[in-house]
Length: 307
Image: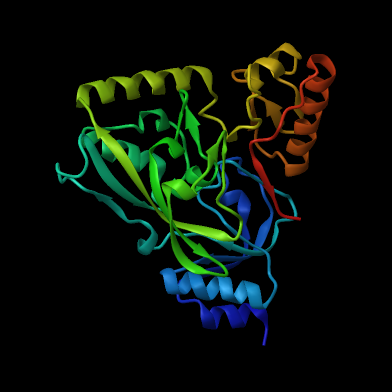
């Protein structure tokens, strides 16, 4: 029996074969994934992971693909997309007795970060204003500790429910979580299922004004109207990566249809038909030039997947 037939008999959710990753990444780049699977629920997800383990297939959970560069030859294994209703949970605890001035929010891994932020703002809950304009899902934002304006997802995270490929479902409390700059201690063998956050009651007008201010600054500074994967490099401790790239006179540098944005030097945009290898070549060019001219080694913020 072929692998395609086997997985079709196991999974209740949607399955696609040879699915172009260019249709699922914000850079609009990437060859086909052998298997694209959308588990229906938790048990379906367990079955998918067990199948991958038994067949020794590489697997990767993909949210909105906003900080991902998929290689041109694609992904030789399973791409798992948590699009089912079971992973879209969004609950707000409005009980005023629940800790002074704070409210409990539980969000499924597949909930869009923008949706969580806007619904929290509607309820007068602050703490996520920094997330305006940040694309992606709650699960992806949590794993990489997405942030802006000197704030991040980890700052408001209280606990995380994960499915570990070896130990099953577990709840990681705050003291077991470690967040740093664009990183967390959630490993590759753990699938985030949902996150519990604690947000503060706040004047709704104050929240709205802050959101408008942050969004205005983001639109002014970043090429939001062009395909990109967000910031390509992490900021060194005392200077922004974009400033270093700009000072190295690399703004506008282009390889094929991959180009360093003229608006924000830490963004690489796809001008139409860019290939992953062109982006990778541009990334290496930037790293070499910044190291040579500034003596600083930039570390990538994006994740490269595939062959």
